[in-house]
Image (cartoon, rainbow, N blue to C red; front, side):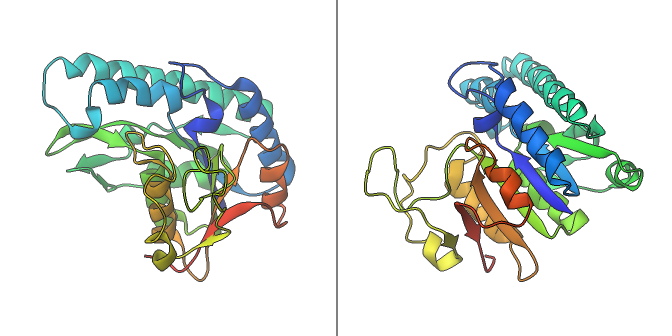
Amino acid sequence: MILIKLGGSIITDKTQYKTFNAAATRRLCKEIADSGASAMIVHGGGSFGHVLAKEHSLQDGFRDPRQTAAVARVQHDMRCLNLMVIDELLSAGIPAVSVPPGSCFMMEDGRLIFDDPEVLLSASRLGIMPVMFGDVVFDRLKGFGICSGDQLMEALCGLYRPERAVFVSDVDGLFDKDPKANPDARLLAEVTRELLGGVSSDSAAADVTGGVRAKMEAMLRMASPERDCVLVNGSAEGRLYSLLKGERVISTIARGGL
């Protein structure tokens, strides 16, 4: 099984509040379906989650009663986004169901607590794809916090033991410095813990879930001798399909673990 995260940067316009990129999402869902790969999907929040979460500092937990309206709004907006992704998966012929992370997880000081996988495993056994997504989740110590799609990927790697984890973003991979500001930025085809230590912290813009560097750290934690973790550009038509078919494509592979 292959675990796939559709990043918020590719399924939404992160600069415009609640702007869904239907064309890109439809194409990526079709590429997944056409590849014939056995897959499970997580997706990010993009402009449906990050804009209000950042504005109200929801990643820091409960600080002010005025945050509660933003918690409710972000959960609402994320469910709207999730249902649009589900629509595209169904149209591509993939039997997908929505599984909000709060239905399976609590958090404790920002750490996911995953006590009962029955909902997810029951769906999978029936050949139904459970689709999870980044969201606001209640926290035993902080009141609430941001459960990122990358955290979900780590948790699901532990549960399903996929042969590969694929992160679909809007960049070719990890660069040694910010490619938008540095024309000589070099794409890193492979990343290890040692190599990541020398990568500029400005190599990608951060968001409330940490940006590309945090993503690569999560990928290294998921990597093992049995599992590739790959960051690939979903903006390039056909690239995800080729990767899922086992072809070598432009990407960054995390190797060796943390």
